[in-house]
Length: 637
Image (tube, rainbow, N blue to C red; front, top):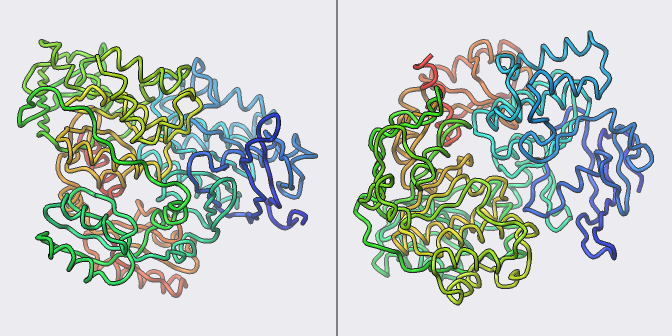
């Protein structure tokens, strides 16, 4: 079948093989069309084939079979013509930037590359700098930018010639929620103002919700396609959340039942997929002495459906028990008192006070450059505080090197030697910590790594590399584990497996876990959260407490849905400047939800936008995070 000439992007029977003897098929008979002005998302686990599909459409990679077209041009026969019509942003934080060039010089380089006339370039540059708010950073070298700023600069360089087609490969991986929101505002503006066509891949399920249509990709093939609502409607199981004590006993009962397909812990709550009736599940729990505090049926999320599709193909890792915990940790495992860290005149961590009890999962959230990584490095003794004190298990980190033995550290880029095999990495860490290799092999087997012993760390899928890095961090039996953005760029299924391991460390072994993350859905896994901004700890509390406080200070969240969403947004934005387009809805914060719902309905009716629906919806951690950070920034202007 020929590509559809009416579609801006079209693939028909697309295939891609790798290896001299075509041993690995990365793309299997993929077909789809993307219309003008549409945002189409590719969603799938690591190694699903998403990057190969995007690279074929960008003319970077030749298809092994099938056909692909961009604006009617065949990518195989006219790759250079295709490249002139598109903006392509490869995977990685600003990977197409030149670190030693300034922001201005990077933009100039891409102007020369695209051979843009100076007048068109100046207009495009001014527009893009305004919407990205990068003008104050024009003289900064790219290497000094935060992750969010790098991605916005990469997008400016991608858009400088204002292409009609954008191909974006995981453009927001490793970027904080505020920068992601800015990024999506830019994308929506380009789509709405210029009817640009966008194909992107993402591992964030909330971003999949922002797309007009999505395709779930597994093992190189599309297994589901449609609007996010269409895909959610494919859910086969029923879903519920319950709060029960003791939680470990409840999990044991749930995981032993044939009518419970999956469970996941979110702090005090357990999210489960099941068949049959919830009352039967509840009866089984109470019969064993478990107390149920609350339970509720829930609609499946897009992530639930994604995992339903993949679960039968990729079974989770076996549970494992880390080595015996060293020492007798104090009730307060981590105690930071007035901790400050300066780099010359720059204050990276500013007078932080924090106490984390034994066995708690504590999440560190904050925008890029907030000071999270610096704080974690001080906790594990890699950096010394400029002022203040840190104690681990009752021992001061800067005065007693023995405190460091209580800590396991998994860095932002994974603490592995990529040119060593799995076994060689384990042997290195076993020798460093004096751990028997038999113990390492046993733990590796229970993490699903036994079949990969001879593989280089660089060749492992990112989910397995993540497990290996965690194993290297805990094999010496630390009482505290520090994880710096351990799931960045990891697909939802691998993230859930990883968080099951974290839960086991905390609940089964009494290990204290401190984890930094940009995935706001992961925040719900934590017992408490610390929100950092500009080096300060601006809020500490449970996810529920922080959401409640955000609603108290900034109001409820309203979701507005209408057939003509663009017209609705034009009417709403003068009244609510911070209104955000979110897939097929517009999100508005309101301190007077009843009055504002009536005012919005009247405004839309007078503006000729009919059939509008306005609902108050629960506040997400993304909304909570952005609210706290922006309130803090405004207070310190």
